[in-house]
Image (cartoon, rainbow, N blue to C red; front, side):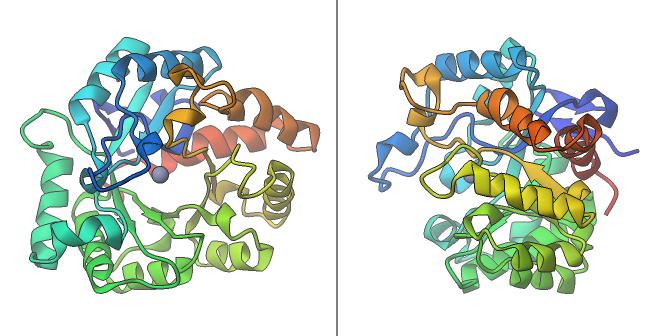
Length: 308
Ligand SMILES: [Zn+2]
């Protein structure tokens, strides 16, 4: 079995526990991002929110903030040590809007080398190693800069075996992402396509699952985009069709106002899935082993390195 690479070192997959596969703990978005609610910069607030998560039964988070969105590996290390929550951080880049200025002048192999270095040696000499690879696309398009990142992600994956976890804009381009990575020699089983609950269509989810790829249902608690009751229907339908082991549940709580720890009154925070959403799924007929598969077994399988 491959190890799972956390910000504090490698752990056995059996030590992972209940995991959210797409969250943000600390982000320093670029200065030209006008919406400052997207900045999550307080180590104290993160420590409070992750403590609540831990007390609710959560044990691990995949921190999906890449370099171009203001990743902070040192802070993640501190927060993980203070709370006992395993944090897996990411290498790679986000969609065009963020990655272009970073990747435009560089070749696919240069980008792949940086990803491999961050997974094998560490990030900027900070002693923190990445455990997952990010790539993203735009609305209904994969731009030339994004295509470079996807190709680099494929090459870095072949070298390290790390999971490729993607950003889709509003759920679009999932099949194109998978096809592009496939052409780089990536098996779809090693891809997690993100944000599919922005495109809540069972046929579409099924066509993604049929490739063997995994699906991120990772906007849970954001009722402004989709009522959670609809997410539940889709999850139940996918489980009934035998795709339960390919679903990853998370909240992508990437705004300070989503976290009670920042003092907001209405945010779902990191406990919502544990306290509200999972009991709701159980009420609707999922048994503990099916929930355990989505929250524990699947993350442990996906996050292992060295199984390219
Ligand atoms: Zn995110």
